[in-house]
Amino acid sequence: MLLSEDELRAGVARMADEITAHYRDRSLTIVGVLTGSIVLLADLIRRLDMPLRLALVQARSYRGRATTPSNLSLNADMLLDVRDRDVLVVDDIFDTGRTLFELVARLDELQVASLRSAVLLRKQGRQQVARGPDFVGFDIPDEFVVGYGLDYDDMYRNLPYLAVLEAADIEQAGPA
Ligand code: 5GP
Ligand code: MG
Image (cartoon, rainbow, N blue to C red; front, side, top):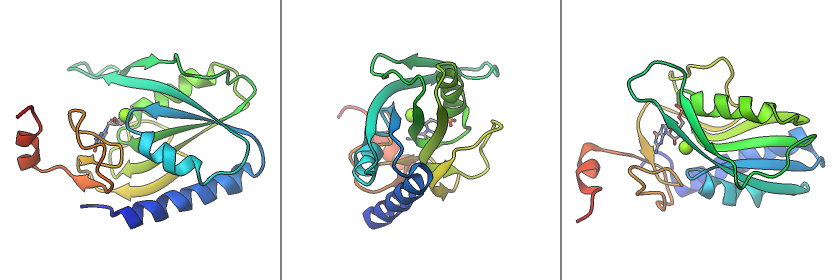
């Protein structure tokens, strides 16, 4: 276990306070990134009491062997109209940052009024892009983590705490 339920709750509350201090009573459009952010979204939005809309996008990055900047495949069917809106992108984890960087670039093309980003976790020493997230719950070491929405092979999202995946867990992840 890396972060307990209590620690996660405190971190989300801290992040909600920072977001509230920044936006005050302005209305906010949150763009949650599926699927990893769903648990964070559920906890975070209940701690925000400005007028708020929740939109969703699904992002998948295919990195393969190419060293080209990530090819982000984006499903925006559940995105709302964001023109002239204050937009806050919410994702589970900032690793290299390529996913968030590219998503922010695409949203920026939609004439938003302002655009910021929040992540629950930021991995130390991994950032490959110029701009980091504006709101961060926790800085964590460079380990592969699961739980609280984050998966390994689509499993473990329902763990209420955050855990480091170990080699023994990887062997058990497939169908019995
Ligand atoms: P980035 O584009 O910042 O390198 O990667 C962000 C995405 O990679 C996250 O949204 C998440 O889907 C995945 N990812 C990166 N690190 C981890 C990790 O430690 N655990 C899990 N479960 N996913 C991760
Ligand atoms: Mg993700």
